[in-house]
Image 1 (tube, rainbow, N blue to C red):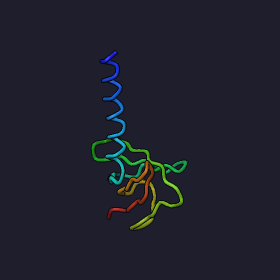
Image 2: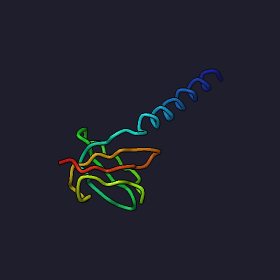
Image 3: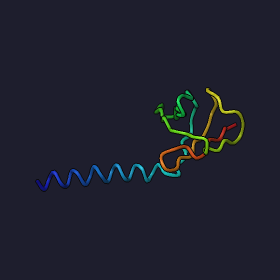
Length: 86
């Protein structure tokens, strides 16, 4: 039972820690898809990040469209700002 409790705490720490790390973080890469209020960005490691945006999401640096280089700023599990990288 002690092992189960320890495993539970480790998993919970990873979940909470991952969210805290993502909050306020920037994700840089190529905007590969805009669909159903989600931006999908492929970073330089080849990972695809699918992040929720809404009407409060600020846009900076130009037109937001597929195929451009962007940086997403994440806050509370949504995109707070998307910036076009030139």
